[in-house]
Each structure stands twice: as C-alpha cells, then as structure tokens.
Length: 344
Image 1 (cartoon, rainbow, N blue to C red):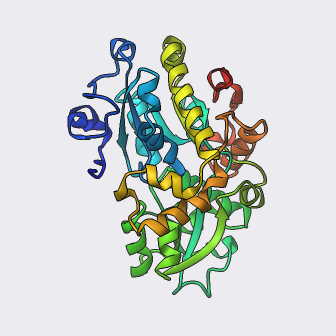
Image 2 (cartoon, rainbow, N blue to C red):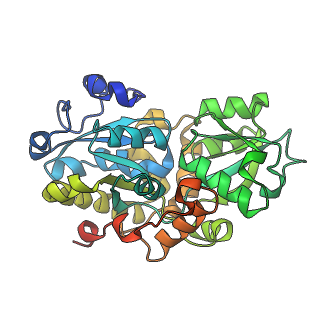
C-alpha cells in the first residue's frame, strides 16, 4: 500500500492521477455537477492516517463507497485549515475535518455545513516534553511557551488558544508553532523547539511509548471533552459547501449512508479488527501501538453520525473566547450542520 500523497490545494486536481487512493477506478479532475452525477467525488482529509479521521479511509477499505455506487478519491493534507482551503477554492467536493471550521467560515460569509458528524469529542491531546514537564504542569503554565499545533488556523490551534484563555493566559503570551503531526511533531518535541503541543493518535501513542513526553490534557473521550471544554465538542465530520449539498442531495445521501454504516461497524468491532482493515503503513509505530491508539480514541466517535444537540453551542462558546473574527459575529448554528441525511 502506497503512502498517501500530501497535496496542496493548488495542485490537488493535477495530482489526482497519482494518489492511488481511488475507491474504484480513476479519479475525476474537477468539481463539476457532471462528475458528481457519475458518482465521482473528491474528499480532502486533514491527515488520512490520523485516528480521529479513521472513518474516511475505513469506509473505503470496507467497500461502502463502492456499494453506494460512488467513486471516491481521498486526498490528504497535514492540517485541517489547508483542507478547508481546498473546499472553498472548489478543488474538492467535501472535507473530512473539524466541524469548528463551519462556524469560522460563516463569520467570513462562506456557507459550509457538516453533513455527517463522526465525533462528539475532539480526540485531541495536549502533551508536554519530558524536559519541560516540571515547568509545564497545566494550561495555566502556557505563558512564554512554544506550543506545537498542526497548522496555524487549524483546530489544534483553536483549542490550544481556548485552553490558554480559559486558564488566564492571553493568546499573545505564548507562541503556537506549526509542526504538523507524526514524525515532525515528535522531532520538534525531542529537539526542544516546542515544550508541548496538541496532537492526536497515533502520534500521542508514540510520544508515550518512546517516553519523550506525557499527556497533559486528554480530550479523546466525551468526559475529557466536558472537563476541558465544558461540554461535548463535535469535531471530526464530513463538511461540504451548502449550495453543493442542496444541488446534489442524492450524492450526499449516498455518502451519508456509507459513513453511517462505517460508524455502526466501528461500534460493534474491536480495535484489533478495525486496525486489521486499515493500510499497514498507517501503523507507523508498529501494529500493537496502532491498536492501542485506536482503542484510546474510539470513545470520541458517534455511532450514528448525528450532531449532539448541545455540541454546536459548545463550539461557538469555545471559538468566541479567543477568535476576534467570531467574537462579535452572529452565527446561525442551524446553518452549520444538517441531520437530514444521517437520520434517513
């Protein structure tokens, strides 16, 4: 199995032929209605090998896209903010990324909505390096620190800023550093270019296993989300441009059918069974560690793809705590998601 290419929005269409990630046949090269009618869809994922986005690749591995008559190409970007750029620029029809981007985009007069809600907790973890562990014991100690995020403007950036503000540290009192995930994050932590950072599994499992750091704030479970953020925080989702959803309801319904089937499958299978279905190269730290990463992250996922009732309000409260774009904006939360397709 080839490693998925990391493709910038500008070259996404050109690189489709090279991805090797098409569900059943050649990838399409545009975002036209004709492509959608043929069942050809391009979805950008904010890190295909991240466990928080596991349902995207698992749906393909289980053959559920194909069963719905869809030809889905999964592309990958290291950070959710870059995936969002691909959607807004029309390079892809959908993004598997964090729901919070739909609120951020609405404040910028772009209408995007979550159509399948994969998760009701962030799945994110704030870790601290062993070297900095004595001086960085909670979010109250963020002041003056360099903290890793996947990308500036990404959901890890959003959540880090919220944890800081909630604990009395202003966003200009620490330095967010874009270090991606996986090996680049691990290297930054080991080399001391960051003292801590926010990341997901399988990177978290590797940090702990390699004994280069420890967990500071764990938001992989609904309980952890409530403790850190004051409520359920809907995160991983399939979100799409609202106009596109409204003009391609049959296609969106098929996507929802495939993803909900996967979420139900995940809820009735063990981490070992789930890991066995995934590409071997996703288990970067070894098979046992990958199984552990899935086990630790599984509680974040929904079983039905439905948005938790109080979730959007939590996300709005979190974002407004630090985001100047959103602080005084009026957000119509009902326009940031739909349950129409998953409930069918």
